[in-house]
Amino acid sequence: MVFFLSVLIIYVAFFSIWLQVKHFLCVLLLFEVITLGMFSMMFFVFSMNSDLFLILLFVAIMVCDAACGLSLLVCSARKFGNDSIYGLILNKF
Image 1: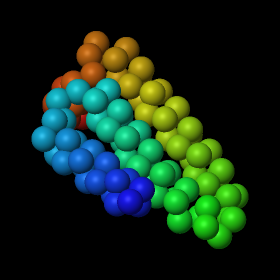
Image 2: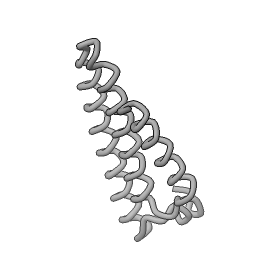
Image 3: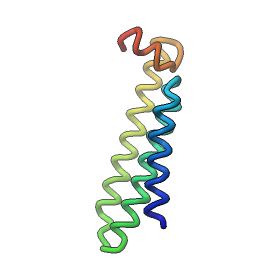
């Protein structure tokens, strides 16, 4: 049940990204929801095998992903003044 719930969370987040790509911050938050769904799926699968090292490695990668996304958001907000995706595409960030 937890596995299917995490798959549903991932699908809903991908669908939300597909529908709503106006702001860079919303896309970053939806990426974090996707990684949270992947984390719950990995925790469900790897907790049965007592192999928790891969889960800790994935959490470290999640933190690095969030930090890189936040730094890109700050750089684009400083350079262009907003976090609009369409502004980044038009200005060729």
